[in-house]
Image (tube, rainbow over all chains, first blue to last red; front, side, top):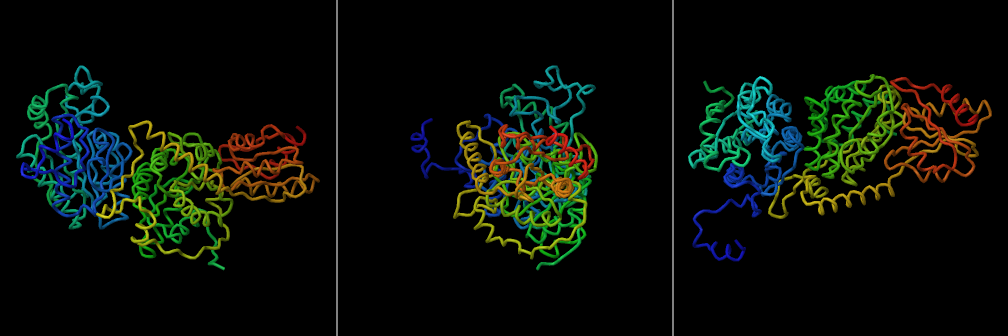
Length: 262
Length: 360
C-alpha cells in the first residue's frame, strides 16, 4: 500500500484507535501474527499512560526483538546476547530514579543469559524484566530453545526434543519466583483481547513497583506463538500454544508483593 | 604537593577511581587484583562521593554492567586479571562498537588458560590488537609505578571521554602488588546530571521533547552503513595515533644500544642499564607509555647510531613485533623475557643483551 493511499484513509474522522506516540512510525519487523508487536505496544502504552517516557531507558536483547529500539520511542541500549539484566543493573544503579526495563526472548534470557537473569533477580535490582517466551529461537531460524517443549520439533530437534539427550525445558519464571530478590512475577499471553488486557495490567504493576521502589525485580513472562518458526499459520499457532504451551507454562501470577501465590 | 601515601598499585587504582569522580565500579575478584574491589568496598565510596561499587556474578556481568553504566554518560570502570579479561572481551567489543567510554584495568598474570597468579606481560596482543571480535582498538596505557597506577586512572577517564572509547590500563602482577610512595591527586567532584547531559548528549539520560531519542547500539544490518561506521572508527583511531602517543626516554644520549620495554620490565631495564654501564656498554631505554597508539616514530627517530635493540617483556615476544615493524629491518631487534609468572632479573637482561645483540 503506497503512502499516499494510507494518508487518504487515515483521516482524523476515521480514527477509532491510535497507536501510542511512545511507538515510532517504523514498520514492525515481526512476522504477521507474532506476539512481539503487541507486547511492544502494551509496554509503551503503559509508559505513555504513566507519563514516564522521559525517564525510561529500555534494553533490547539479541533475538527477533533485537531491533526493539527502532520501535520504542525512548532512549535505549542494545545488549549483547543474554546480558540485558547486567546492563540494566549498571544503568539503574547509576540512575536510581529512572525507569529501566529489559525486553528479552527465551533464548536470550533462559539460555545464554541465565546467570545474568538469576543474579539480577537475586540481587533484587529495582528493574522490570519482560520475558517473551515462544519456545524457539525465532531470529536464527527456528532452533531449539531452553523452553522448547518435550517432543517439540525445531531445526535442531528435527525429530522432536528428546528429553533423554537434549534435556528438559527450563521454567525460568518459576525459578526466579523462588528468589528473595523478585517482588512481582507473573505469566501472561497476548493471543486474545482479554489476555492483552491482563498482560497490560501486569506490565503496569511492574512499572508501578519500580516507581514505588518496592525493592525487587518485577518479572513478567509473555507467552507468544512463533508461527513461522513452528511452521503453522498464526491461528493454528495460537491454538497449538493454548493446547501445549499453557499446560506446561500456566498463566497467572506466581508472586505478588514479594509473596509466592499458593 | 598532594597527599603522600604508601600503597599497593591495586589500592592506588581504587583510591584514584574515587578521586577521579568515577560513578560506578563493577568487578569480580581474581588474583592478583582483588585488592581493587576490596579497597573500594572498605572505603565506602558511596559515602565519600556517591560512587557505586558492585561485586558482579562474573567478569562477563561486570563488563556488561560497565557497558550499561557507560551508556548513561557517567564514569564507569572495572578491573580484572588475564583470564577475567578474556571473559570481558565480548563486552569490550560492544563498548568499542557503540563508542562508549570506560576504564578497564588488567593486572596481567601468566597464561594461557588459568596459567599462574604471578606477574606476566603476555596480554599485549589481546590489549593492543583487538582481543574481542571486529575491527576496533582500545587506548592502552602501561603504568610502570604505583604513582602511574593512580595517575592513569584520571588520565584514562579523560582520554576515554575525549574519544568516546574504552581504555585499558595494562598493568602486571608486579605493579599491582608492590608498594610504593604515591602522591594522590586532589579529588575531582563527580559530574552533575546537568553536566552529563551537556557533555555527553549521546547518553541514555531519558528522551526529552527537546531531542531525538538516543540509541546506543553496535548493530547495523545494512552493510554499507556498517562500513561507514567502521570508517568512522578507523578515522578516530588515526586521530588518537596522531595526538596521544606517550613514551619516556631514559639515558638515551650517546648510546650504542637500546632497550624497549614497558611496565615492570622497563624498571628492570633501568637497573640493567646501570649494570651495563659498569661494563662500558652504552645503552638507553625507550619506555612506551601508550601501547596503543604505539610510539613507532619515536623508535624510528632514535635509529641513527643505534646498533641493535633488545625488547624486554615477560612474554614469548609480543611487543617486539611492533618494534620490528617500526625498525623495518634497519638494525637487529631481538626479544628477551621470562614467562609463566617468572620475573627476569637485571643480570639476566644484561646477559641476554650481550648474547643476542652485542655478541649476535
